[in-house]
Length: 200
Length: 220
Image (cartoon, each protein chain N blue to C red):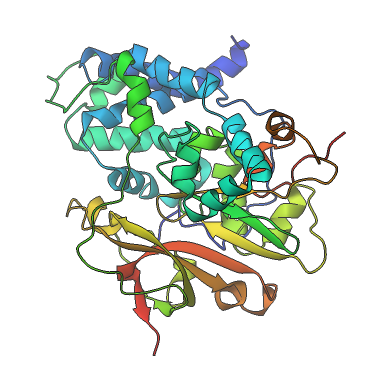
């Protein structure tokens, strides 16, 4: 699959993981077909489109938005997005003058049920160390500068509550359907390192 | 513990670099590690907090230089070796040498959708009322346990305000030590950025953490 040099670079860990899977399977601790099914679920079913649906519904349905603010777990589960790392949810709402950013400084807690598996940067020391002490610097790394006077609230996911940022609805989207709105909701806007896309 | 995982406020790691159109996995082995670790949950040999502690108790230099799935691999291996599920020799030789131990369950492919949907809720029924209400001022305790805690260094001995009562949740500090779930009230606590970081922080900015009642004391 890769050239020879790449293969030998990775061969230690690849061999170790293969050995682990062989031993765990032969000992009956895992069924490799279950491992396939788990991987497949996150490759094809559970990802940021789930969260985009939640956001688009919050933008278009004030009753749902209120429910999301009051009990995000129930509101999100009602859309069918109830799964691992989404058992207990909180939604936080960006507004003029108020921006939210989500981090897990202690590990990599992330709302899998609505965003899928976290990107490498979310799990890595640069983001985890700086988001709490220098959120504006982190946003600048993403090319995002907030308007003067905007306050930032950083949510450090230290428990089993998982956070979903509801970005501001972009201007120029009056009358858009939920499906149309969902196309503007990028993953990073639901973490707080970006805004929702502008309509083209 | 004051380990390599407690990163909030550290400096010198450089900019955050995001990869456009990043795949879920950068190599096949990463996918296998993620799938195996999730599947092994069904074996019931460790709880969530023991699993977290196994990762954060890697030597800091390893923790900071390993990729995330390498950390998962090392931690899961450590947990399984500790419990007699496998041996280092079996891993290096890639074959079974010792008999398997009895585990709770082996996850079958047909059980995967239900197991992922169920997840692992940590809210538990409460007998007591919460000690704090939204608006209350609290000070976090100053602890430095060598065992697992979810009170990060940067938020110890700091004054904040209760923002919300989340519920009555499993307490990680005891659960990680095998001393039981000992569920207790979990709160969202809001700190001004300046209370945590001093004058360098922007006035108006806040940081919230989800903290259990044993971490909090009323302020006089």
